[in-house]
Image (cartoon, rainbow, N blue to C red):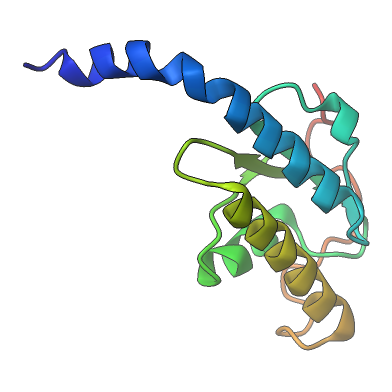
Amino acid sequence: MIAAPGLLALRDGPRGLAGDHARARALAAALAVIPGVDIDPATVHSNIVVFVLASGTLTPAALCSRLRSRGVLANPFRAGVRFVTHRDVGAAGCEAAAAAVAAVLAEAGSGEADGCEGVSSAYGQGPAWPG
């Protein structure tokens, strides 16, 4: 009985990976055109999308916090931000995530957010990506 979830994952999981990877590449492409986001979509080969923020934008932790308040989950990762696509997040969810990143960065850049809290003053805090 306890092994049932594992057996389902082994049976059904591999079929969904190609879709997860395709959605990750689409998310990376959408992020790549956002001012302040540094990512090369050609480097995304799995369901993990990591990007760095330009100097003078929010810190990864501040961006992730603001995304969370909009219902978008991302994590600070090294000097950047990490998204992971999976079968529960479709194309519309990836588009919404990219739109939320764009909106949060635009608000932060225009001063609509909460002042300078969370603004990065130096690019590449921590180990460089990829590392």
